[in-house]
Image 1 (cartoon, rainbow, N blue to C red):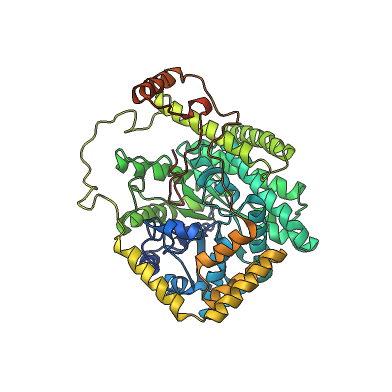
Image 2 (cartoon, rainbow, N blue to C red):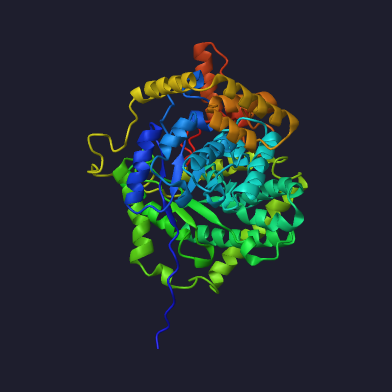
Length: 547
């Protein structure tokens, strides 16, 4: 007699989306939901991520380019127009301004009549990885950690189904992390936040706080290793929750994660090959039931070129739907339990991660060891690039099999969507109208309350929500944080680090010296401190673009 079992529910199916304006992004969201998407994943533009209004001088040329601009409650209201937030699971990829964007979200939900205690979703709210990889930070690490804890404490009390932090190892891999480093650095970040939160919460309730910490991970092309990495994540998180925090309920120790598969490995050359890469990488986070993602969002085949068009996003969504609904994957127990090769690899990854975690603990934890972790990522990324350049690592279409036929997917629009430059002007005009229409006295009072909370060390979420309702803008909120906590300026180089290799640079130095002699100038190059950091380029939140 054939044994039958009820099929598992599919993971949340998302696409990472947002561009141009709140209204345009809202239309995209509702269109994707109608096509079968089951959750939202919001991309914010870079001024919003770094706490500048659209009319700020530093926002010029970036408004609406890699995400949606949200300057105030009106923008957030337009972004979720006709989308009932009490029925939606929303992920917001936002970090430095996470308390503010969550406050705007709560304010809109209350306007819709939602019971905010029933809201479900996630704010990324992981600043440590910003110092290590992306660079969209505002304040220094310690006050940033305090604000992360403010969000978590508020959610614990008011939005218990909300994930107040998404520990983001995704960008660590994009910055070059090995699987062991990705495991260790992400878990160290999670423990830093929980250690900060522990004194704020009654001991009996702390396991419920631990349960709400979620993760956002990356899955690269070496999909067997990546699948083993996810199984290692599950085991190590269970171990940390039980031994470090005394969580006895296995459900509260569950490793809950969402994923976007690797964007670093997407190629501009022969971009149609990226479809296969994305599919293979998705298997790493779906095949193993006991380490399966709770939410999956996939890049589009052409994201190495620019913003994907709606059809491109639909194609990636259909990939998820075919795996979830057409195959029999969800009808089986874990396919890899008891596999000796998998067990060996998982144990090796855990051993390496534990050693790195012990090293970080000896330095005082994640915040104290930011410069060390950064140096390790620089070193690992240099190794990755060197392997590609030496052809030790094959990248199809890049360093092997580079001959290609013209792609019929590259149409007259260049194969990507571009944002009309007029969008920025319109956004600025709408922002000016918003400022003119609000109650100036109410805004001043709200900002004063926010300033006092920051000065006195109070939780900034309640005054932030009040400020959102009063009409305060993103730039005004962030300005108060800058005044209270200062701004973080990352090092322009990593010269003290062990990763600053100088071998094999003699020829390069000789060439630069020859150019210097011809120009009559002394040209400084990072040869004497390799890995010296030029500034990070602006980048979409799912893709690191740094020199």
